[in-house]
Image (cartoon, rainbow, N blue to C red; front, side, top):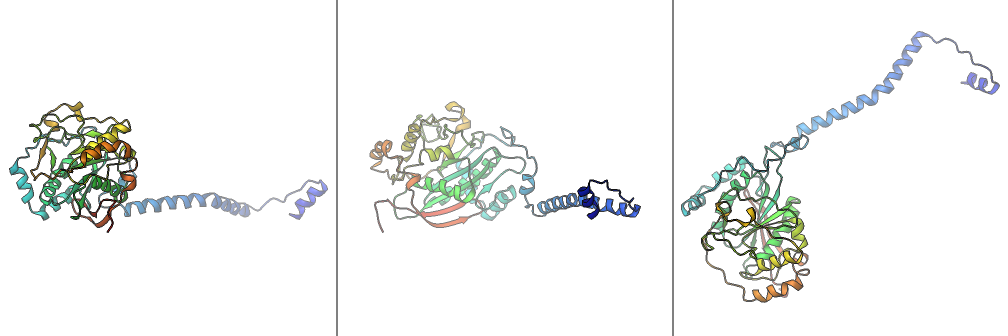
Length: 356
């Protein structure tokens, strides 16, 4: 180094002594090590990551599937079988089947704790949360779950069934239970694209009846051809109860249901008002044409006591919907359990002007 500096300072040329061949060899080796070392480190790191992914892949292959290109499910599922005869004998047989056998069969089909399912053969195009409000409907719920799981699986949906059960203190509040189910679905199971708001006593007869997510701006009224409504004749277009599908974005936009309807009736009428107030267009499958594909069978039950205040509440809905709904939802969760066929949420609710 001193020779080089002196040469620079004096302006004289530097005459180098020829290097020994052995020194040149080891110099090249050292240079190659500098180049190859980061390449080897990168290769080893990638290999370790691949081995970790394979060793930590779950039994159903979800993690491995996430690293591969899984094809989306077809627009029309090849698993559909058509119409099912939901006679009293059929439903009775479903209710009497041994519970352990049913749960084993559902687990073999891919149903996970909490009533979650997604197809393994393809990537579902729809993530659906089925919200079912109940109280004292054990027999109906048994038939509903045993029928609906295979029905939804044949449509190749990614879905969860959430049952929200109200305690005994106050009259039944279907709208508030739907709001609770929506909120719990987002908290417990992730961001589902849409919710299907489903009465427990309603069963679709044909698996061609789409339980897919509607597009934003177009919530879907599904149960418009019901056996007990004038022998499957079409229900008026203003009806928005029994079974309805709405995107998560639209449900938040309209602030969900009103929480003010205690007792039977009115909450679905006001929900229809809310969709109109936000310029949403309620649609029906197959343009509302009545056919066997859209038929619903109703499980029998005693008629509930109507809400005497429902008409006044409906008329007030236009002015109060921004303050009454998801934004002011209050409840006490008494139980949360991921059961083999559904997520069970038991809640205590009460009118907001009541203190305990």
